[in-house]
Length: 220
Image 1 (cartoon, helix red, strand yellow):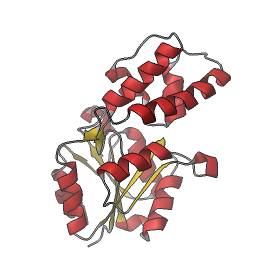
Image 2 (tube, rainbow, N blue to C red):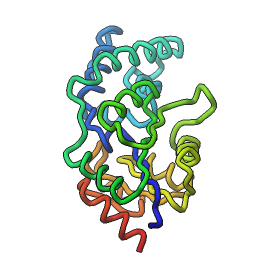
Image 3 (cartoon, rainbow, N blue to C red):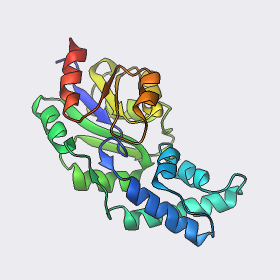
Image 4 (cartoon, one colour):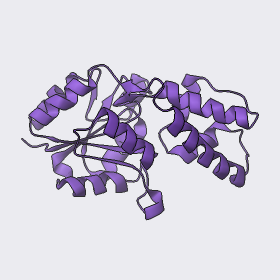
């Protein structure tokens, strides 16, 4: 078995969380008297951490002090509302179980801030081998820098040659390249399949059940 670790993005990859993300964003917009956003709009804003999500949700030119305060408020609002409708995509838990039964280590690396990442993983995926959320305050840069993925590989005791990373965005393809791992894009998430194909991952999975077979094919 060549690929000993399979590491996943969270939002749009393992969890269908866009409804709750949008709900929290719009609660924030109401507080600040700003226009509300659709799920499609919020989907285009996520992937680079809470601060970027808030910045993109506000009008261009909003001052830094307001954005910092709003980001802190958003994190609280999201924690209070992140379990309204969020759930794993159909077939995800079965796919993770298959990977574990094959003897592979399974983990999550997400730009979502750490507290929410940990709570969601503990609730929905208690049997995974590790999870990491945004930790820039301790010098671990968020994706697309490879820091988080490299740190998780170190924690799992695997090399880049033994790792596959999966995500639903171009950022996930980029971080995989920078870390030197293989990359599988998933088309059931927040990005159009055509966009993912153009980013040239090693493969694209259209259903969670495809993932173990694609990994086996990459092993040759």
